[in-house]
Length: 168
Length: 166
Image (cartoon, rainbow over all chains, first blue to last red; front, side, top):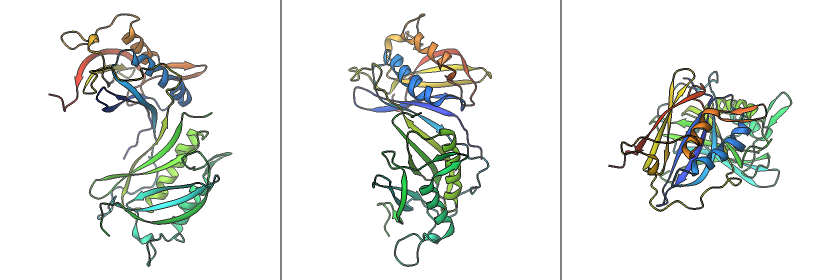
């Protein structure tokens, strides 16, 4: 499976009835992201605004991450369900909680009693360490953060999380 | 260097019924984008070991600020996202790429639904922007087709209604 590595500038426009739709413009993976984000995207919105009737409501960029070479399974395991998942909760250095949900979480990593994830399992532990420590390449570290940009510094809990539509 | 208003990364996962879900992570604005891409590759591999679904893609979403430019404060009465213009472009590789801009003022279209413009008008300004991109110092951001080949020619614009519109 091939995964692209390009960039798309995206704009959302709202019409007079309040309906919103989006469109995108492709960029090569070599495009300078700060120039794109801080210059091209806003100033091009200003140009487009002159010939559309709708109102710009948001804009941004999506950078595709190439996953070629990453060891991942070729197809979902039979019976996997995105409604089944696990919530991982962390805290940031500002003391704020932050969490995310992993869909199709493998129940083999759940504790036999209760709904907690077995954080002593090696793959779970490695993943939690990645989120807390961030990823370091050379002298550059990429920290995970809460929604306000504060670095994640601690793990709180991980529990089964089923969507509301699913009965347990 | 700060990137816009927020940075999130996502990993797309499908289950055995083909339904899709996402894992979404937050990152600080000062993050190094090149290393972040590698970090997401690492996270995707680790998540694969934790799930029964299949990782089918990943990306980074950056929210831009529109606060510093002049934009209309409200949609013009009668504007409709179902009405728009599809802009077509030629790339240096010989390929083509298109995108559709909604709510384009119909006064820019002739009776056949073809975009009409003259040098230096608003639409021409936009066409020249897409062809040239933006250069800031040594840095450039110039549109391309889906295969990263630079857009070099404007092929035309035609009226485009979305499928829901008769």
